[in-house]
Length: 66
Image (cartoon, rainbow, N blue to C red; front, side, top):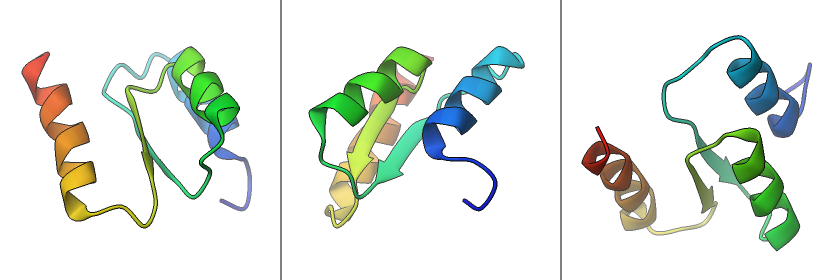
């Protein structure tokens, strides 16, 4: 994203009252990045080059809690 990174986007969305689920789709496999994203309020963290089933799984997990 040209104007902000994903961490800033998550923080801004949550700060401004966005309550819908956020699934991070990233190339970063860093456990620290995942931890930070989750702490900022994302609901799941999916690493790119995953099988489509990985993204489907993240969406289904969110649906179970609604």
